[in-house]
Image (cartoon, rainbow, N blue to C red; front, side, top):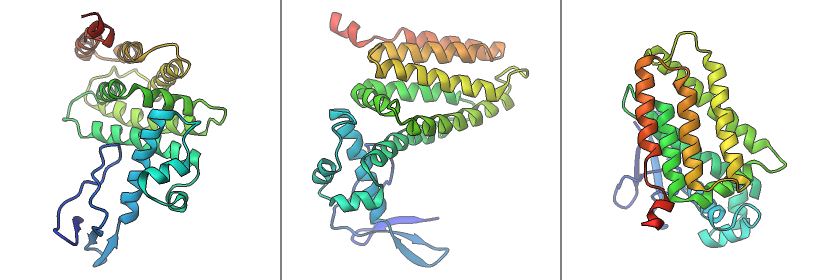
Length: 254
């Protein structure tokens, strides 16, 4: 097992995607002890890369893709522009990697859910929770995905379809889906639902409360059509609990 520590106090440091990354003091040299090779491997670049991606998500949230700049990002992080180019690449590379890194963190979190839980409903819950926390980031991320260059959109589609295929196969083995369901087709339909909802957000056709309701209702109904009777009851309870949660408009009215 690899042990992460600093030269100073051997403190464990969490290396993670997402804006929650724990960054040690800049003076600490961080290492991973690789017992297979017997040589310590420096991971300063990994820390810097995670900081860059977290910083890019913050700037996307504040200013959007058009105003995201390598110069501003470098200044905010006290890094050189060349460091960002070397570790990740151009402005488009930075934005794309930051968005994909966040989605990959969500999928990794869902994989840690207790055995027997519905992973797809868990992904929707986690996504909705993050939308509530930072709706501006997700609106700007959607705008970045649906620009003329569709490479980011296609990469996200491929990733999501792979996750859904994996989780649906697991649910089928657990007896939660009907045996006649085409799992590959269902995975593709779920991805299309995601894209349609994100396109509405990008085009300003819904706010975060409407997006969350649409995500819950569309995914719930899609899965409900493929589920066994027992799993249908689980999905119905999940949909009811999520769709009756107070919205921002309810709080403002109160």
